[in-house]
Image (cartoon, rainbow, N blue to C red; front, side, top):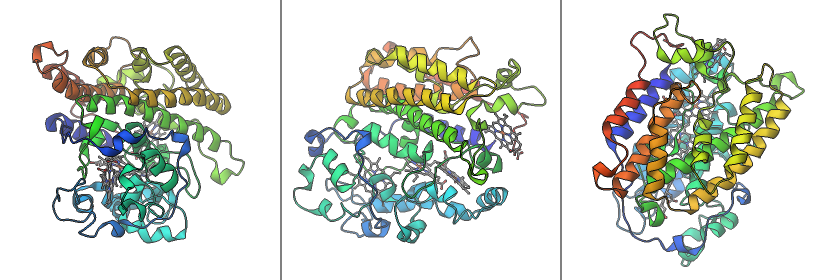
Length: 452
Ligand code: HEC
Ligand code: HEC
Ligand code: HEC
Ligand code: HEC
């Protein structure tokens, strides 16, 4: 399957590329003004202005960094180096056509694709911005209310919370907020306002869409950056904090998608009803087995008769909760275990699943905000890294998805450790250890994956 090799490209890039997190330490005046808003207080979606309205040379369209408080060449970087600017054009490729044919839709017009491959917004005028793909306003919020004010004197002293609630400019310096923005597309999200559910389910995957395997810190490091991290985000714990916050935020987003899948499976009208349980919530290897039986990961499947619930985004969440003293780990473990046994039952009841997922999602939401508020110290990072990278004996907690998550976690934690603990001998993680985990992820030559 392309998706797996794709992830490899990512992990390799991150591994070889190392940290690009170490940037300017210039203090940010906005940073001091206030904390970010709670996720429930988001501004309503306003009208889009389109990427063109940001692209003038004096604003964000300079050819090179300008040396102002912002880089000034954001539009140039996005348009020339960031895949997001190509996200709509991708819908015209042969691959997209094949996916769309299998689903009986037109990829370039269907909300089933445009929800993530174009910038979300309200109103018919949105179509005018399709060509921009995933543009500025997808990550920074519809500009209708903030485009004027953000160039005026005094804007710098407005707090991020007010900027978001009153003007609709997302508080993306807050990592949990930032991760939630990405997760809306890279994990998925329930329908809202004028947007149908954003969901890459097994129908899309079987039609040829890459399975989504998002890890916030790795993907963040992969975007050609059009900004410099400032304030707390320029501190050495950044990569580790981005990983930890990303784990919790993405797990929460996945639970929202799960609840939404449960709800949509109950719709009366058959044409709108979706499959339940949704196949992509289960270990791919429990159905897609290697016919030649040369692949270690397929032992995961062969050792079991039935399907195993395996959500990429929830792989490490219980382990992480166990190591965070400030979190209600008892209830997180309890709800996670309960959800897991519901999903692993022969016919999971969608209402029970939904209730349980909702409880867990609430705990995770509170947790992500707390995690983001604290700095992480070297001791904590070492502890988590040691636990996460330890070899697994039992079948639970192992398997390709878990190994891949462990690898990505280890890379992020090591990036912070390298900055926090300069003496290599005092660090719990070394390169050989990382390479061992990566080797465990390789598919044996000749493995018959579903697509090739
Ligand atoms: C939930 C959001 C979401 C939906 C819905 C969605 N996509 Fe995607 N799509 C993505 C993301 C995210 C990626 C990038 C995957 C990655 O790199 O991890 C992607 C990647 C792709 C790729 C591979 C692009 C490349 O550069 O190789 C194609 C093709 C594609 N999508 C087509 C479609 C089509 C056609 C539809 C509608 C049937 C669709 N997508 C619906 C989020 C989505
Ligand atoms: C995929 C998401 C994404 C897209 C698309 C995107 N940005 Fe950003 N942008 C970010 C993130 C993340 C940051 C860093 C957090 C921050 O500074 O708010 C950032 C930072 C910035 C900053 C620096 C803010 C500061 O205070 O230092 C500017 C300016 C900016 N973006 C402008 C743009 C423009 C203009 C576009 C479109 C041409 C764009 N962005 C597209 C995610 C995105
Ligand atoms: C509106 C939906 C949307 C949002 C929001 C979004 N993305 Fe994406 N992202 C996509 C789609 C669709 C693609 C695939 C584009 C393609 O293949 O051309 C993509 C591709 C990417 C890629 C390229 C992967 C590769 O193939 O190399 C990275 C990295 C990425 N996104 C990171 C992020 C991060 C980090 C954020 C949050 C700051 C974010 N994205 C926000 C939809 C989104
Ligand atoms: C419950 C069993 C089951 C699970 C779990 C499952 N699949 Fe499938 N998959 C199938 C079946 C049956 C088909 C063929 C029917 C279809 O196309 O929907 C299929 C088809 C596919 C295809 C298309 C194969 C081809 O040759 O065209 C791909 C790709 C795929 N699955 C990937 C995945 C991935 C990735 C996962 C895990 C996220 C997964 N599947 C989980 C049963 C499953």
